[in-house]
Length: 79
Image (cartoon, rainbow, N blue to C red; front, side, top):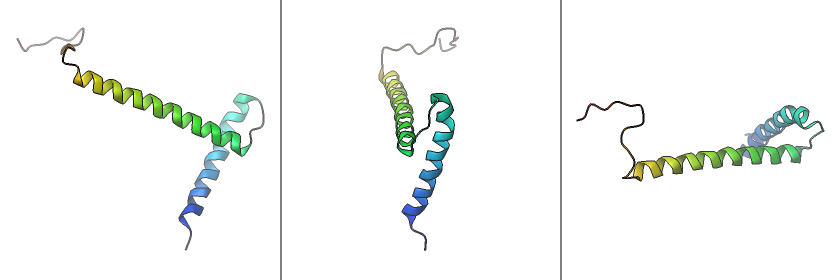
């Protein structure tokens, strides 16, 4: 039976190889596997942070009682 961590190592190896393939031409130098792993971690962290900010922004807007219920340009027929 194949170990689960071996399958994960295989996938990680493919991701590292793909990261090197994408980033080496842009950086103009050879990347080590460690360089590629750090790039993957940084890009993942960056987009995770953007998603976290977006969620916080949505929660703040949902909890803001003073926020207008009609966006600019919208027509409301509630009156």
